[in-house]
Image 1 (cartoon, chains in turn orange, green):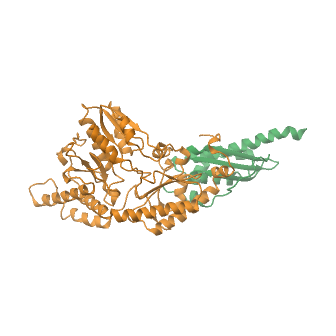
Image 2 (tube, helix red, strand yellow):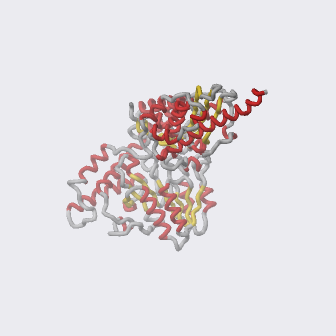
Image 3 (spheres, each protein chain N blue to C red):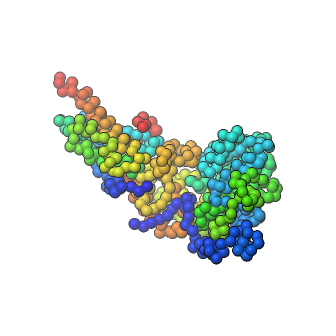
Length: 403
Length: 134
């Protein structure tokens, strides 16, 4: 059986070039980047500084504005909790969106339990919020807007530059979780008015367990109360001995992603379009979720009506994708992101996310189309919903026996 | 989580997929579950004059375990009388298919579908009985 990996929004394999850059920093150059008085430390520090430069360049930042983290969950927590606590005397109101990643939703909920107020914006049916929605939600005591650059499940990209400009005008700090967008679409923290930005190395062919948080130093100088206290590393915002090999990998991954972005986006976007065209040519009753106009080039989220997501994945065999049906996890709830678009639970249960990547080939896509068509037809043959729909029964009017 | 070989086999080669005419007096239909819950099972049985199940069909919208549970249920009820079929327990399906705890609800649904189909055909027979007597 052919193996195809189309779950690159979950994680990516380490690029061989990245691995090669990392290897010397496990043994030969094992020094602590904070050791200021010997060569081992200097070599490590030099490598870390180079990586800082590589990450900063991707988003048009200064290398001094990059704080190393263990990944985006830590970056998001550091940014949101750090701003909330540092600026609590200025206000206790935060604006975010219902379809953010849990690593943003949960710190915001935690702050609610501490007496902060959070406005949870509703996205439109394609997953976008408008700058007007953010403007209307703003209050005198608003201290932070946190909105993801691109959504992990549907790939939709928010109007980041417009929202950033509004935040500048209203003197509100703007954080963006750019986990899925960093290195995949052009980002410019200056032009887009971004004050804080989180990224993870493992989404861009770097190692797991390392990432970066961009923290603006000028206009305004953003200050954060740290959540990890200790030796005062990373300008006091994130203590802890630096993971030098991981950081070197993060830098190399960032540089490679930036260099290849123009050609890769065309290639991967072309494959994504080929996948959608192939599916729509051979199957009826399928929907594309998200916003085709404002979307990551690698992400395609599709609802295959009348068949359930987990059974689809089972039929796909060794094609790795992700389902909007949470039958896959312990909870039986379907994806809150798809529900957040106003989609019914029944359709959310029928959704599959295909996320392509650097190592996806045309053959992978053609094989996936073939398998998907075969599986959907097999499952529709045994689907009572498909049968009812064919008979002209309106499924929304049926009285179901919920269990 | 890997699927047991039996689940995969029922998923790839489901037994007794199909539909029977629900209007027939000797056909019982049970439809349980809801699309928004992620599973709907339709299970039908056909009985002879001695209340023995001579045929069974299913259609299921749901995960692989739900499909396998209903496929297995149709195999098991065939040849049984209605009363014997009522003895079918979801735990037997759990054991046979090696369902993990998170999938036990699939077996419950299959048992419910069998019971609903039996209830449906019994009701039809009761309603038809006076007509036969007169």
